[in-house]
Length: 256
Image 1 (tube, rainbow, N blue to C red):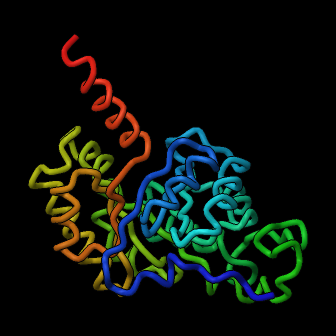
Image 2 (tube, rainbow, N blue to C red; image 1 turned 60 degrees about the horizontal axis):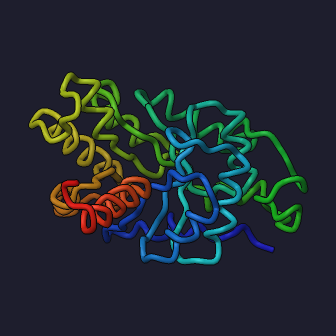
């Protein structure tokens, strides 16, 4: 058996790919989203109540569909990264990357020695299909996709070096954290924030890497697509459910 194909990594060909944030932390909800036509799905381990087992359940639930899973870790913890890779995560997003040194450490955490320091799980892991992928340790990196998040002034200042780090496949801008970090809380459309987002996009493309961003507002998403972002999260499952529920109630209750 060969290392499983990574459809997300393969999809980064220059056309914008549209995704959705998955925050319900259940395989059932994840599978519903996977049937709706999104190109990719972000299983959020940072701000959603996910654990390694719930992320595993979602990876298993969406595996049968053409919607490619991306898993976001809660931190830079190499022990957690090891667990997420072992359960079969192939596209991994890491938040709050401010320097190229941090990016290089994250790359090392996803590689086996001598290129890195990822621990060997062998036949215990879903990633190796419990030992059926005989050359997993020498080929796994070929299908891994590491996305690092730039969401601070420091990250933007170091965007060129971060994007140029060997083993980093993509840079994802966090507009809300970025706007908060530079003093424009709740206003990612402030001109200063927009300039920093554009700078990060240009630096990432100059390094030959893909760039992504979260943009649940349609006007923002269309602007970022016009700019050339490669993958854009245009929905958040919790927000979609909440808004649809409020609109349904309003049709019957009005202002009562």
